[in-house]
Image 1 (tube, chains in turn yellow, blue):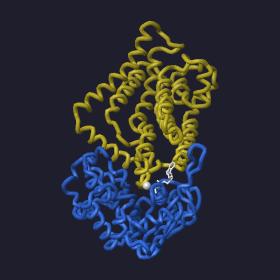
Image 2 (tube, rainbow over the protein chains, first blue to last red; image 1 turned 135 degrees about the horizontal axis):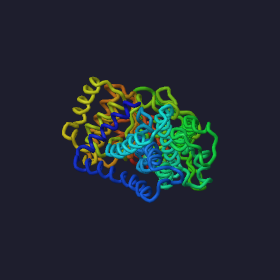
Image 3 (cartoon, protein in one colour; image 1 turned 90 degrees about the vertical axis):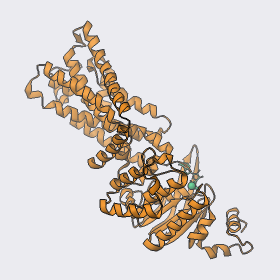
Length: 262
Length: 247
Ligand SMILES: Nc1ncnc2c1ncn2[C@@H]1O[C@H](COP(=O)(O)OP(=O)(O)O)[C@@H](O)[C@H]1O
Ligand SMILES: [Mg+2]
C-alpha cells in the first residue's frame, strides 16, 4: 500500500519537476505563507510574555506539534477533499475499476511535492521549541505519540470530509472549512478559546488530543479547564475511535455512490 | 462469465424514483461476444457500472467471473477490463506511456510480461507514434486506442466497453473493430459492448441484447433479431421498430 502510494506520488512529482522554476517558486511560497503563522505568534509575544497563561516557547511547541501533523496530512492525504470534483468529472468511476483502494488513489492524486516546505517549517519550529523549553526528559516520549495521534486524527478528519462529499457533492467548501479550520484551531493554546468550544473539540471532535491534552503532560501543566489528569493519555483512544468512524463513513459513502448519469 | 438474476437499480431523484434497470436477467458464457443495444437512457451504462462494481444494485444478484462486483470490486478489477467511450480511464495530464506505467503498478503486472503485452498492443493498436504525448493532446481515435490498451494490459478475462466507437471516424472505427474481433477470436476474451452503431453489431456480435426502459426486450442472435420484424430488411429499421414497439 505504501509502495503503491509512493509510486503514484513519484509519478506526480516527476510531472511537477518538468517545470523546475515553478516547483521552486511554489516551495518557497509555501514556506513564506507558513512563516506568516509564526510571525503572528511572534508579534503577539512582542507585546506580552504570556498568551492565556502560555509562554512564547510553549505556544511554539503547541504550534509545532499540531502543524507538523497537519502539514504531513496536507501533503499526503488532503487530496481526498477533491473527491467531489472526481465525482462530477466521472474520474472516481475510473478509480473504482482499478484493483487499488480509491482512498489511496485519491490521496495520491496530483500529489504536490512542494508542500514539503511547510513540513520543514513545522519541524524547525518544533525543534526550536524543544530545545528552548526546559522539558522533563521523562515526558518526551509523549512527543512522537502525540504527533502520530495528530496524523491519525487529521487523516480521519479528511476522510470524513471526503465521505461527506458523497452526499454534499455540490458543497465541497463546507467540508474544507472543517479540515482547514481545525488545522488553524490547533495552532494556539486552547485556553484562549471559550469553555464551550473547548468542550466541543474535546468530546465531540477530539481535536484536543492532537496537541492540547498531551502537550499539557509534556509541559507538566494543569489544565486551565480542569480536566482530570488521565485525559492527557487518551490521544490514541480518541484517534482510534475517530479513525474507525471515518472508515465506516467512507465505506457507506462508497456503497451509496451513484456515479453520474450518462 | 457474467450472470445477472433479477437485477434492479433505482435512483432517487428529488422526490421521484428512477428505475434505471429492472428485473434484468441474462448470462454471458466465456468467449462470447455480445452487443448490448438500447436507446439513450435505457440503462446500458448503469448495467455496465454494476458489472464492474462501481454501482451497487438495489435488488437482485450480479456475478462476474464468479464474484459479486460490489463486494469484491478490487479482486474483480484484476479480471475485468473496462472502457468508457465518453471518458478516459487514462491520466489526462500525463503522457500515454506514463499512464501505462501507472497501470502496470496498480495492477502489479510483472515487468517482463508487461513489456511483451505493451509491445504487442502498441503494434496491433498502432500506438507507437504517440506514447510520449500527453493524453489531453491525443485525438479521439488515438485516445480510444490508448484506452483499449490500458484496459487490456493486465490480460483480463472479460472486457466491457461502453460506447467505444462513439464519435470516431470510419477508419478508427474499423481498426477498433478489427482489434476487438481478433482479441475475442485469438485470446478468447469475453466481450460485452454497448453501442449505438449498428455497424459494430453487424460486424462483431454473434449475440445481441436489447434493453429499453431498464428491461431486456430482446436476447438472441443477429438473425433472430432480424426475424422479429420480417417486413424490414435493414438492421436500422429492425432496431427502430423494436425501440418504438411497432415491430
Ligand atoms: N447517477 C444517476 N443519478 C440519477 N439518475 C441516473 C443516474 N445514472 C443514470 N440515471 C438514470 O438512469 C437511466 C438509465 O441511464 P443509463 O444507464 O446511463 O442509460 P444509457 O447508458 O442506456 O443511455 C436514465 O434515466 C438516467 O437518467
Ligand atoms: Mg450510456
